[in-house]
Image (cartoon, rainbow, N blue to C red; front, side, top):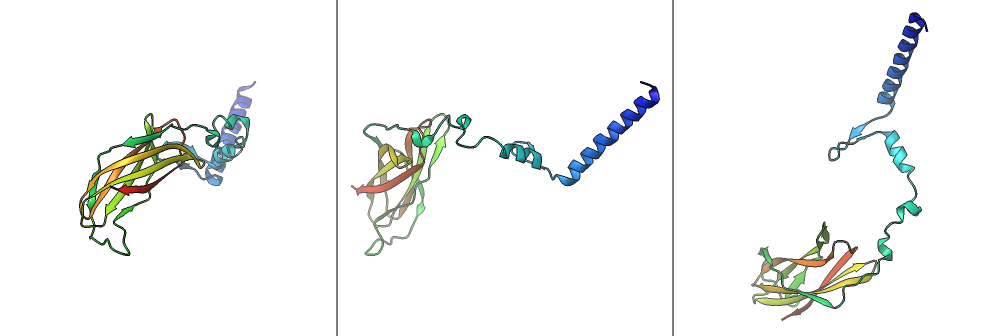
Length: 182
């Protein structure tokens, strides 16, 4: 190829590449994910949107609804409680002596599931309570737990960690209820 032709082809290629880059920059907004550093463009999003459907065989490695695991018996726990604060003494006909807040649910990777139960003593007496927690997956019980909560003084609000099943057993819900103020 003659030097003039090479120069012309090289110049046209550079102009074409520059034009494509400018068109992409103008027509396709980009944003950077601050957590991962990945740059997202509509092309990348469209490619990922065309990924195999959830019911494709490549995505059926683990179906948490098909899990059939149950920890036998009832696990009894005696955890330490954290004093979260105090509340006014309001127990009476319209206010129960002890109230429980809806427990949280999280997993500690490599260890176990964890729930935090908040118990409030609304009375002027010290309360010893037992709370029953049920860890479930798709409505099926995975583990039943009884938690013996340390004594709660008058008006005390306690946060109590409740240990659930191993991390590799799928759990999608935990429910807790007061079994007895002892």
